[in-house]
Length: 155
Image 1 (tube, rainbow, N blue to C red):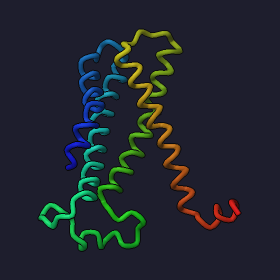
Image 2 (image 1 turned 90 degrees about the vertical axis):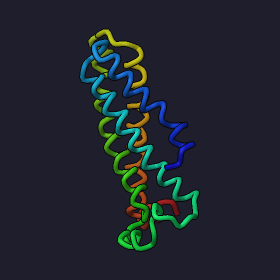
Image 3 (image 1 turned 180 degrees about the horizontal axis):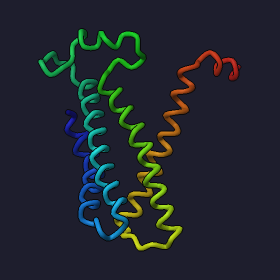
């Protein structure tokens, strides 16, 4: 685990977990549960990314490092690091889950329900970030899957 990366990025998921638990009844209960689940999933994604960064930065041959035999099963794939694959798959799941947060925030504004600012604004901002990044990742994946067609359109 890349400790500097974890120390720098962990406050946001921890904020989501703690705020979701403490403000459970200050807003829609489903939104508080959503915040806790999102906080856990974001922390898990950041752990995957930190392990990937640690592998890139350290060139040691210890038992914890992966050797070439483990990467051998990923030969036919474009991404050979399993931690990076897990991170991207988890990011897709979080992106789909973020649309629930956007919908709940929309209904709070639409129905003029009371919701704590500590719950509403972080939920809206993180949901928008993950929703937009999901669209970008899907577009990038589609473009990378068919390089022949898109190269002809550029020329």
